[in-house]
Image (cartoon, rainbow, N blue to C red):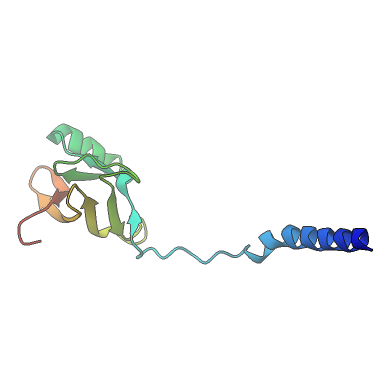
Length: 120
């Protein structure tokens, strides 16, 4: 009797685990306005030629003291997805906490993100 009960319980558990992935088949769409790590889309400014090449490749230039590290200690988090919704409200982690990155259009250089402008 115990053996039969254990067999039935094992079969029921197996059936439950077999259909569990189907219950999660329709994941909710990702909100493009939710904060997300966009560090891999940013490159630290090292010169005008480099900045123009980075922008031509579709990446963002950040002018600041920290190299962006995806998922790491100096990650950059923004709202927007950079495709359908432009990036906005970007912040970078530093030794103290989160610092605002301000989008600025600079003559010759173009659109860049500047770390910690006063008053931001």
